[in-house]
Amino acid sequence: MVEAMRRSDHDNGDARGVMLSFDVEDWNRIMGARVGQIDGPAQSAAFERQMQAIFELLDQTGWKATFFLLGTTLERHPEIAREIARRNDEIASHGYRHEPVYRMSPDAFRRDLEKSIEIIDKFCGKRPLGYRAPYFSINRDCVWAYELIAELGFVYDSSQYDSPWVHRRLKDIPTEPYRLRLPSGRDLIEMPLSVWKMRRMTIPIGGGSYWRVLPKSFLALGLRESSRNTSPSALYFHPYECDPDALHLDPDASATGFQHFLAAYWNIRFNVARRWLLPRIRQVLSHFEVTTYIQTVQRIRPPHEIVQRRLSCEGWVD
Ligand SMILES: [Zn+2]
Image (cartoon, rainbow, N blue to C red; front, side, top):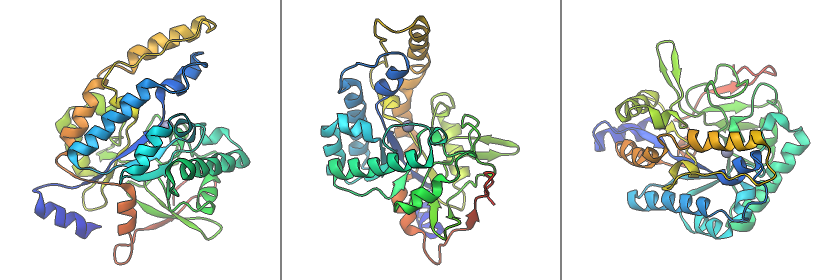
């Protein structure tokens, strides 16, 4: 892996690598359900527009990305699923229902994962090798989830993010990929989202609102620093962040006053500086070698083996 990056440095000035991913979910459905917009159209025109914007970005740049697919979204948008299957990007799983893992029992989580694998196979004809939990929600209260992920045949997980927004996140999350040894003897390659450690600060530059508010030069510097001497930076974005039009939630007449208030607040909050994001991704990543997650995983073998770690029951990565 280091060798690949040195080669890239040589070929392209100061270029380093980034792994590009999208958590493919329909924002209007997920957020709409929370504000009483339960009976919206089965197929969201906004989601289709957002995915087309992502496909255009990839076609124009020649980049490949990892799509972490949500089962319920695939079911409602079979034509998008077909397009994703046709492309040569990586297909991975984002679960079925988009429930936080710490709110599920082990049995419910297993059913969610199995359903996700089934739906991806049905609509895309492929078996996902990577998994990312909704909201990075494998936290200190549900470390058992890793055993199930490995048992169901996933090769890697990308659910760890050392961000203050992650509820009760694991402690001492490493900054680069590592091999997670599990009590059963199985293992999983863990691909944590990128953070930039700067003195005592940890800046989660893997995605999210940081990409909307931080200067582009600062983001590029952070990516270079976070990938220094190690693996490509792990990034994540969402279709809704790439919408060329304004996001809009419209609660049903039966919604409560609070739900109307929440919809109005989110319509403002989620649109702030959002239209900058797609041009930003294009500009900032143009200085990097863009890869998928599985490409990095496939490079992990002797002599480029990665460190092994264990996870304590209390949620410490040792
Ligand atoms: Zn998600």
